Length: 301
Length: 301
Image 1 (cartoon, one colour):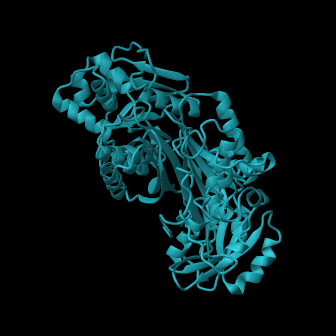
Image 2 (cartoon, one colour; image 1 turned 90 degrees about the horizontal axis):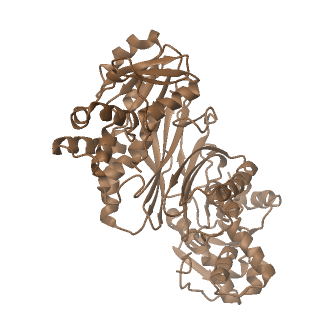
Image 3 (cartoon, one colour; image 1 turned 120 degrees about the vertical axis):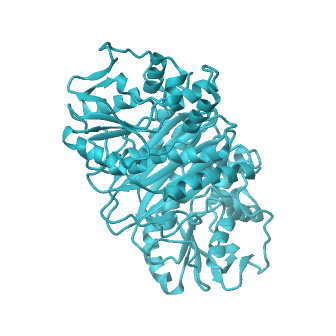
């Protein structure tokens, strides 16, 4: 960074020979988060959802800007929000290079994140080929379960409740995994809108189909223990807000994936295969097909 | 642009050897604009205020991202908003590379703009030196006059009203002027918060003072005709929302400035001089000092 906050613009020197990956995401109070959420968790999450988009491109995070609209100047709230945001920024070596704070009737947080990736190595959505394996980091559905509990739709054991609440409020962007997948994954996306819907985006952009083996879906202990089997699977497929990576790997790179994934701090699970035939088949252990009643995250609207 | 809207991130190739200038600005309904404003004008202005920040750095605009929070999905409104935004984007050769549209109770528009500037040539706020001339593009105070009329504080002749309304709603970012000032201006800022306040930012960052000759302030015919002399001067100094450039030029570069400014589509006026003594002196034609009752734009709160 040549020049940071305090002039008309920030001035930056992009590393020579790298491509710039840019993403922007907005969180609105009472739409994307509860207005009374812990501001430190909110600061973490507002940045995390953007870093997750960089991770899904295989980009190394570098810079972020923050546009914050607030109903009142609450110094304590702002200090805690910043504490959460900067803790994650520091851990991920992201510099906050600029911002704009405005007054408005509702809290609205827009963050834009910038990262770098060598030319030709970005993980796009359009590179999946028939025969590629479909993989997932972590365990999908945990954030969806936490939301269902928050809305009183499920009654959770307190220990499970705490575990999935952390997954909802403190998503860990899979940055190291995204970088490690350069040259290995043929396509990638983060499953912020739910596994079924986001895998659908890969299928659409790559003009392929997929068969997912539901018995292979990596369910967290909390999810497996709290819902019956069908509901757990449906939550894992449609829950959203998970910020795990779904990616495809050609058979020739499967061994290379196994070799890098042993160092990861999260699970890496093969859940299915890309098919030439279009459409998303969801196959139960007995070979029967599951039909989803909804495709993705709707905040239980 | 390698990859635009439709993946987790946009992928961009920064031109080799250039610095990246980045700015982010938010407009909130009923705070920064009237909720019933012409959406086409709003689309123009939302981008213009960001391009004005790039202009104030001497950067050439390249890319923009848009985060739009809307209370309802109004296709006609959105089409008109986009028409205004893209007309300016096309004219300034800016590509919209990404966005996020969300639902919320109030319209909130955040745009981030990216531009390029050769290393060491950015127009910063901290380079003004005693003896440098202080200059201004265009005529300050017109947007402030339009707002005063909108709030019923002044009664304007309809022709003047239309002229200043255009200045308020359709500010023209001084991109060509900013680029032309590379290597000429020692400091620059856009006067979005009012001339006195924004010149104050240059003085503070450059650790200098200034003497402004009020008789030299370039008043538009509308402003000069609509207010008495003192009120016109005060509006020009504090009105805000003008998006003109205020910049300083060393005496050795004054001739070079005159040579480039003849090609500009706006006035370029010398209004004062940077002083070693700190503080902003506002001098009337008779030599007496003006003291401002307010420093900058307060939306007539």
